[in-house]
Image (tube, rainbow over all chains, first blue to last red):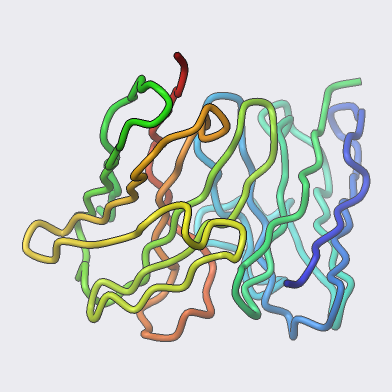
Length: 107
Length: 123
């Protein structure tokens, strides 16, 4: 199985901050990476796929980058509705493993 | 509108069987893989496996192989996740989710997701 390691596991930030979350795969995954946002009591929602492609309707303050084994999710200017938990997922090979999540909290 | 609607919450005793469902609408059900994801209380997301409704090709995570069974009924656009003998450790929220693009390849992300089915197993 490919292991996905996200960092940090939690993060405190303020509205307007720029934040970056990192996801590292245990082997190369050829940009087969998705990012999801989950709010308490709700199902996850897709933000980006193919490492950097923004899902239609997702605000442009979200962006993704990376290659090989290392990927990042950046939120350029945090909004109140962005405080949530974020997960990466590799879909390069089954099982399509998730990272352990990053909880983004208000400072 | 593409939508996945899951069955309601379940409360079961250890050793009982259970089958939960996920009905797709607004798209060609047989053309997109559907997957299942477990989220234990206060924990992260775990990929359980995927099934292709077109031919019932199924890929399980080794962690869930033999513990659950995935199936589909194409006639009613519904995917199922079932247990033959529940354990307390099966207590979790279970989400179904569709692959994001039309393809018979299992390589894809999840979008959209169902609303989740809470399964509680307690004596």
